[in-house]
Length: 138
Image (tube, rainbow, N blue to C red):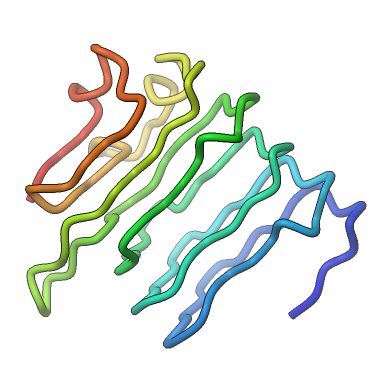
């Protein structure tokens, strides 16, 4: 699936990626990426630096790594279940955060749960002191 570089918002209601990656890096004006339900069994997610909002809501992402380090304008972050699966128990993930992530990007999430759910043993790179209060480890 190809998107034009000028696209600013991508929203999916339900998506399943059985194999392969979601590469949005060529959508250079992308500001918002939203999945109500995204199930990924492997692969990677690649994003352009322009992204300001990530809302993966009720998603289950069985990926080894999510690198958000270049998203220096990120002002909303709701990742859902990263590396966790009720069926398999999940895998530890390396989550790399932008070095300038503000607490308001997570405190504004009203999902009825913590905005980041990780498998115990996961690694968080560039983790601010306050970040753990927005993470649930399973």
